[in-house]
Each structure stands twice: as structure tokens, then as C-alpha cells.
Amino acid sequence: MVKVTIVGATGNVGMFAAHAISSIPPMDEILLHGREGREALLTGISQDLKDSFAARGTDIAVGWTTHLEDVAGSDVVVVTAGTPRTSDQDRMDLAMGNARLIAPICRTIGEVAPETRILMVTNPVDVMTCVALKYSGLKPTQVAGLGTHLDSMRLKSLIASFFHVHVSEVHTRIIGEHGDSMVPLWSATTIGGIKISNLPEFTHLPVREIIESVKCSGQAIIQNKGSTVYGPGEAIASLVKTILLDENRILTVSAFIKTEIHGIGGDVCIGVPARINRDGVFPIAIRIDEEEAIAFRGSAEKIRGITQTVLQKLQEEKV
Image (cartoon, rainbow, N blue to C red; front, side, top):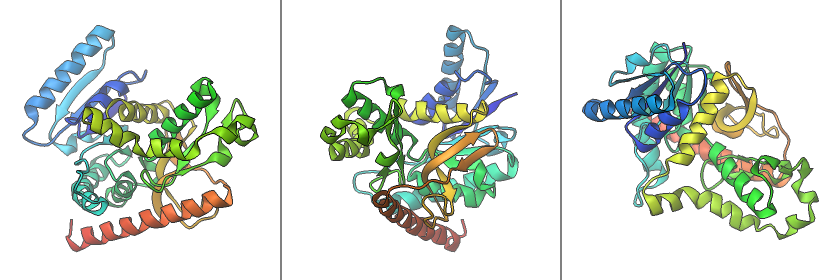
């Protein structure tokens, strides 16, 4: 029996992620978790999902709960709970507010589901992934964040559009922070197996504009429609599928690293290439161009600093 739990299922991303995850072949049960006082909404979401499964012709059990203890037996727990950043709020305020929520949630998950895999979606995702790792007590391979997975897919799509090729012909990734200090790996980007810098048309690629578009994509969507839903939801489902089907795909997620990336000191959760399967998430050791290494080092130092401050404050507050 395959069970996936969505913690924060009453939010837009959690709701759509549940629907996207339901299309994964081995799925038997989806559990929706929300806070007390949201019982009516949880009931409505679960019934709506059941109706969609009936129309699709799939037989998946859907339940809901306001008790975290019910995540026991989950193969994967997707955590989307938290509050989005407002225009007048800096990253540290967002980090502390969500960390106070995520820490006790993940402590309980670790206690009742010690064999599960946690996929962190709550922002700032790199910092929250480290909070989840520390408070759950799970192994580093059991905890990952959505990180730069969707950013990498956005970059892939933009490159494919510029070169007028099918998106499957493009292989690229973004590492580092899911945020302003993200690092595109042009040195590892290929089109049809050909290194992108070996293509004459590469000299005309508007690199800065493309990266700025990736960085601002989420905010642009929020300004136009209120929230990002379909992109994150499908990205979450693709990671859950990779775990459940033991696919051994190399995807870019927020994971705990030491010196895998160009020998750069880590001890932080940040976006990196990782082999993902049923056993968990395993960062891949790689070498990158010196310019990319410098940028990644700066990104890691930034995230490490914020993470250390957040963990210290949580300890002081005895969360």
C-alpha cells in the first residue's frame, strides 16, 4: 500500500499537488492534513478529489485529518504548510514565522513516521528543509526540499523556446538558493547532447534576461493570478513519482551537502543535483566552472547564515 500525505492541504499548492500526485500509478491512499478549524474545507477538498477520481476511473482512497499523528505509515510526506511572503516582509521575517510552524510539525512527523521521506515546499525552502532535517531527526537522505527543481524546469523551457527545439532535447539545471543567488550551470547545459556553448547561436542567447525571468517568474504569476499553483504542483508530483517508482533520476532539489559541489564547504541544505529513488535523496559530486563555483559558494554562505540564525532563535525560544 502506497500512502502520501499532504501537510497544508487546504492551500492552493497543497490542493493541486494532491490531484497531480493522484496520477502516479502505484498510489493507494492520499491523506490531506490541515489545521483545526478547517474541517469543512478538508471535507470539500476530499470529496472534490473523489469525484475527479471517479470521472478519471481511478480507485484511490482519500482521507483528511487535523491530527499529525495520522501521517504514520506515509511513504512520502509533502509539507506545504506556512504563509507566503508579503510585500512588506523581509526574508528573515518569513523564515522565522514559518520555522516556528515547521519545526514542531516535522518533530511529530519524525516521531510517528520514522521511515518516511519528507519533501519540503514551504518557503524559504532551503532554510525550511534544514529545519525539517534537524527537528524530524531523520537521516539527510530522507529529507529534501523542492529547491531549484522548478527553477531548472523554467530555464529548460526558456532555452528550448529560444533554440526552437523540443523541451526534452534540453538538459540544464540551476543550483544554489531558490531565490536571488541561484546559479545556472551553463557549463552543464546541452541541447541534443551538444554543449550549448558549442552552438554558434549561443552567442545571441539573452542570458541575463532569461535568468531574470526565471527569478521573477513566481512573483509575476502571483501578481497576475494571485498564486503559483500548477507549476509547483506538477513539480512536487514529479519528485514524489521519482521516489515512489524508484527511478534513480538526477534532479535538482534542496538537500544537505558537505563538499559534493566542487569541493565547496556545505553543511547546509541547498539546491544541488541529486540521485533520487525509493531510498531517498543522494547529492551527486560534481565539478563546475570557476565562475559558477564562486557564485555557488556565495549562495551557500548566504543560506548557511540565515539557517544558523533561524536555528539559534528556535533554540532560544525552545520551539
